[in-house]
Amino acid sequence: MRFIGNKSQLLDNIKEVVDKHAVDASTFCDIFSGTASVARYFKQWYEIYSNDLLYFSYCLQRGTIENPRKPTFDKLASALGISNPIQYFNEMATADMESLKQEKRFFQNNYAPAGGRMYLTDLNALRIDYARNTIENWRRHGYLSDNEYFYLIASIIEGIPFVSNISGTYGAFNKTWDIRSKKLFTLIDLPVVDNGRNNKSYHKDGTLLLQEISGDILYIDPPYNERQYLPNYHVLETAAKYDFPALRGITGQRPYELQKSNFCSKRTVCSALDSLLKNAKFKHIILSYNTDGIMSLDEIERIMKSHGIPSTYEVYFIPYRRFKSRNKNTKKDILKEMLIYIQKEV
Ligand SMILES: C[S@@+](CC[C@H](N)C(=O)[O-])C[C@H]1O[C@@H](n2cnc3c(N)ncnc32)[C@H](O)[C@@H]1O
Image (cartoon, rainbow, N blue to C red; front, side, top):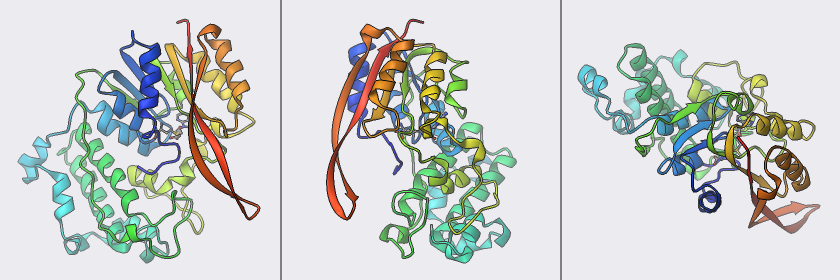
């Protein structure tokens, strides 16, 4: 999924650090899970705890991490004869979805031209509205278990970025239609690894969650800069909650005061990392950060060493290139992704 800081390109690098330091480990906590790409990858080897402040991230995790395997939809099959709801929605003609009452079409009424915005075409917005309303009805009638419900919500969320008319994030929509937005929205059939363990997904402030859980490996991938995540992904949050929020402004933001992260402010980030590490009851700690982030490497070293065993501290640099435009000149910057390891006495 397109998501700021998605680590799907860094999985092998993280695995190398894990394998070098944590041969004795059996549990892995992805405390800032985002797209759940790291948790999904490590699920094949470890019992996983995953977590994020964003509810749509929780749904992605809940559908593929806490779920032990792909659901079978037995009740839905016996009640309505639908054994594969993903295929059911994906193969349905849009004309058949027109029966959905106007007042139930939150996406079409707010994120599509019918509602004065261009995040999605009217047709794709209706397909999302139809699937979301139907899934809530099925749940209300008892046709879906929680595992099945969250699997379907995750399948919807994964499908939306493929047809969204945005350049990267939902901070704004494009004023003309991007080619991807003309494709038909479909739910994604997500694979689920069955690792035979008791995996658990959470939707909490990571620092507070670490007061409750303990384990072996703690992977920490906080935001690097002052851009809060929710305003950049508000459409996905609404798809997950489907809570008909009061939207604001041209871009249609939902309220997000309660989901602000103190890792996104230069003023609070150091004490945020300090509290998180203080609470951590994990032996192996791996922090992902970026040389362009709002915390300096010196600050990170000081904080990590104050909670861990200083002689075990190690930094791994993973170079990548990025092109930035500044003062009309195109300037080539070399930034580095870092993986920073320390062992903690627990
Ligand atoms: C860099 S992204 C993680 C990306 C993720 N590793 C991936 O591969 O998709 C940072 C994540 O931290 C989450 N976050 C920020 N502050 C948080 C907090 N205090 N507790 C839990 N999650 C938080 C954000 O919502 C965002 O999803």
